[in-house]
Amino acid sequence: MDVVLAPGAHRALRNRGGVRCAALSDGALRRGPAVLTSAVPLHPARAGEAVHRHGGPR
Image 1: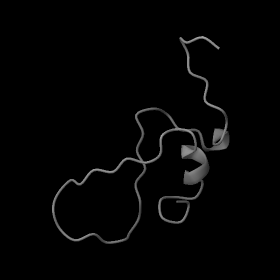
Image 2: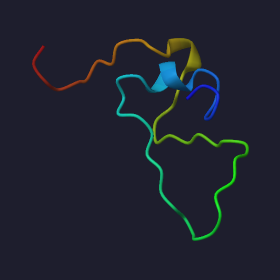
Image 3: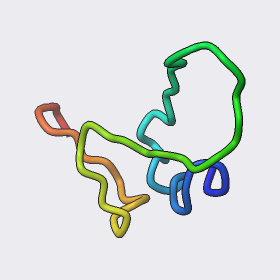
Image 4: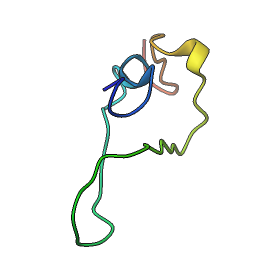
């Protein structure tokens, strides 16, 4: 994942559900630069830290 997506991607996505992909159009698939987008801010320095969910019992 670090090679195909981006350096640090495996550690950043661990325990966060993985990667989702969606086909935007038909056509041939080619390798090239990856674009990583997220609905929440990502902090590379904190990659791999435990995720603490709010609102539930601990």
